[in-house]
Image (cartoon, rainbow, N blue to C red; front, side, top):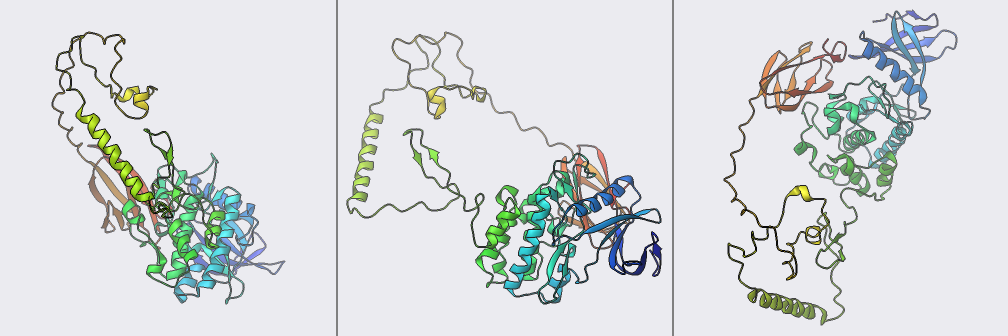
Length: 472
């Protein structure tokens, strides 16, 4: 910790400590020559990977020139540790804004949230995904009665299409209450739609005063994330546009969310976007008629039949009845199936082998049984009769479970496979496959990692909150 009055780099004087966390401490400093105040963020990291990530944070924020993003002015040396010189924002943050008065005017919610979406959209335009959007990382500035948002803390941000990202694969980073399901298992593979999910969580909290998902819930299971999080269940007067923005952003499958901040702004303005629920019905082709019917795969009702002609419906029913009668007559006149033995050899067998999917035969194209061979067709090859299907083999026995050795530094509580455990070393059994561990650190920040369990094997999992990285 830097004491008040400490001179840094010969030009900054420490005035106070603004806050401290697992990764860094932020100080209020004064430039001795300019007489201007700045925020100084000093890293606590020691590992090369975390130091690289801290410097990357400064580089990313320095690249963004938008009034809704906190500016980074410089990177300096602070007694051997890197420090970011940032503009000082004195208005608190969105987390405090939500807590001081849980239910704000909905017009104010929309105004403030729209500015936030525009700021995140500016980062996305620069191919930067924040990956840790939450109310605590949105500072507020300007008139307290009508504040404006300023996005900060790009410490775990990702540059899209960058091979230099320090994030490891199969590792979840972020804050659980605002983390997209796909981000929990592999933070490296996420895209802009993970930020869209977090924006949905933030909007839900701004409207209702409650978090969409509990902080300490592993919350990555599909059942939890598929719940319809309509804020009108808590606050019925919520306008349709705000409610739809929340519901669409919090879709479990990222393909069903708004695909960009631009689409999210369209929803906020009461417009509609393609994809997901409400998409245009997908036409499918009837194999027996060769024409298209507007079948709605999303379960919406089809347009009603025109009732302008009073004889239309009875005529359709009579026609259907006649077709059924004709079909039944042909069915009754069908010859008996051929006997077991065939005078020309083995009986004709329809090949349902999936290895023949590449065939372009007419019968396979529409899934129907091929027609009887013509009289002048060559006879089928003579050969042994096909064997009768043997009794199905019993399913293979389940693989024996593996064991996960779970710990943390300092010892912290965690959740594993839907159960909560106290702060201690644990040896837990689990079936083979990928499993999520969510730790709750000393400062209340959650970290999630994914471990692969193999049958009959042990695997270790440990998170070090002192360096905010897996244990060395």
